Image 1 (cartoon, helix red, strand yellow):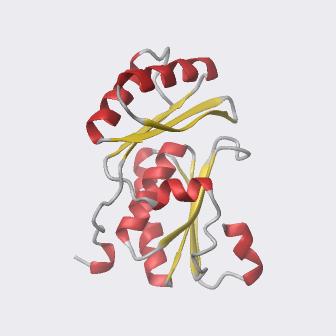
Image 2 (tube, helix red, strand yellow; image 1 turned 30 degrees about the vertical axis):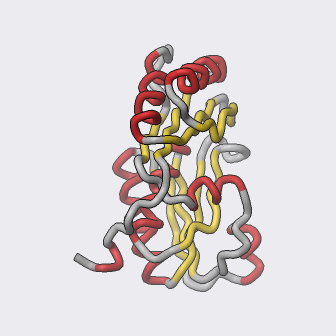
Length: 192
């Protein structure tokens, strides 16, 4: 096996997410998620185009049972969901802040139709190759789509983008991807 494609050891908590097609049903599902087990609610909000995101973390067994409980009473199946047993810690960090401490080298962008698929694809990217997650944007102002940006050496970025785009295609939620070997300096702030 190519060492650049070997998965890195998992390090983070379990993440669970429900992407629901109804705002009202989303709030009700979030209530069931929180009442089921001691999980931490990280995101609970409506996003365009009328979707609702519920992202939470905790122990694998707690996240699993909360995910099941949140899904159980939905009037329709979730648009997407995720159970990520040992998420890379940079995932949530990239969602909530600009990562100025990460220098920009080559850049890879992967765009997905759902937030859940993007988060798992980003986890695949950072565990597949020696790249850093520069940023992740989830649904708000994006018509419900989402994307993430990784940076590192060109070969590592290509490996990360290939693996994560392949994963997103497999779920049917891939929109696009690109590797920019030497991004212009003026793009730095926009890629973050």
